[in-house]
Image 1 (tube, rainbow, N blue to C red):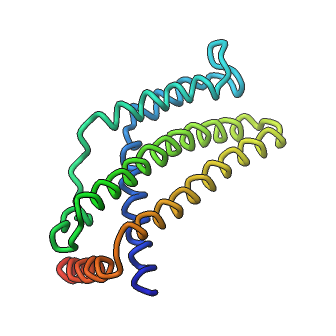
Image 2: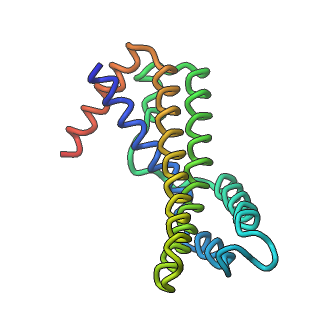
Length: 179
């Protein structure tokens, strides 16, 4: 049970970091922030609608671009050693892809909301408006965490007990090599 939990945590952290890395392009974040002119209006459109359009465009652009080379090896690097079937690999890649899209989009949303919150605090806006902004931020954080946990369980269900043992052994060996 302990090894399974370690696997889940490793996969969760690795996938979360990998997913968040697609949203780290500063130009992308600047564009989303630049869209937000007023708390409730952006060039005549509601903020949510305009930001959603920008988020969809940016996520699609990032997905279409080749990913940066990962410094840390993933389970895909050890497909043969773990004994992943092509079907398992496809399922895992689909789960990772979904996670990248959702967590990346949520990161962009959170960055935009945090910029709004900072501006609101600086301008000493009404506390009720600040509270609503904090609630929006919290909602996205909860959704992201919940999705991350649910996706991790799906990943765990994709692997057999033997594959989990092999993957744990490989991770241990890799960690020892880093020391």
